[in-house]
Length: 397
Image (cartoon, rainbow, N blue to C red; front, side, top):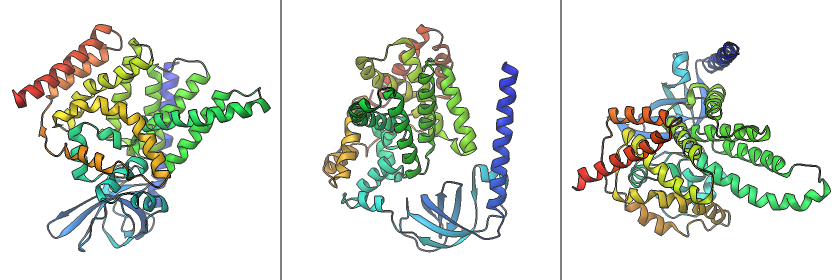
């Protein structure tokens, strides 16, 4: 049975590779190709600008010698010369010469969000929160120092909140009309409706990698629940990675996708030893701060004492996110801008700490053992606490 499974996985990989190669041949077919994309990074180098762009098909770099304004998150059209792009580069990220860069108008929803905020910082922040746009580097540094970057990068947390809100709203509506079709299963029908609604949201946000993982996992969890299987099985996580890879191939890979998968693994560990209750749900935020501190500070490293408040901010965010969505729908999304800006300004000053690679290896080994041994589960929490204490003590001791 195991050999048959490996064979099917290998055949699926070959099929996905062939599909990607056919898309690649179509991409390089003409010597000049016009593409529409969103600029997700921009910086000046010597006497020209480097632009990083992304659309539903590719992520690529190009350069421009014009004196450009800040085009971060702007939609543009441009003509490129794709024929020298290799297949491997197409699968990942590549450089391509370009010309005829043109700015496309804002979408109605982008304009609707922008007009509710007076500062560019708040416009950028809320377009990132609702549409998955790239956060400006200066704002990203503040969010990282405060330990809340994940709150403004669309992920499973946001889909979970959206799912809960949709269940609460349509659950009661469905219950009222169910008297006309009592033979239907309310939870299955609402679950299907939620998944369809969230798929349209993925289309709106141009399929960010973190949301891809979260959505695929939601579908798998729904199917596991439908067939009365254990939703906390590691099979769910493995299937999520495989299906996300199959659908979007190598474009899903990156630090953000890695951290999201790691985060889900630690959630699985938590509920392996604790029942999913309201109180444990509160404890989960503090536990996740501990274990993810090691990973996030190995890759990034910004530290600020306000970061210690991030578990509380995570809890508040569960109410803040749907509230802001309602306020934006009502056209008054800027109500809390002053308070948010003050909080963000607390992240202006920070220092860097380095989590040793040896610490990370030890932490990974202990985390794997923790799936089988409860003492190792407590061990990773203790080790994370020691690393945090040592980081703070090393700076202020």
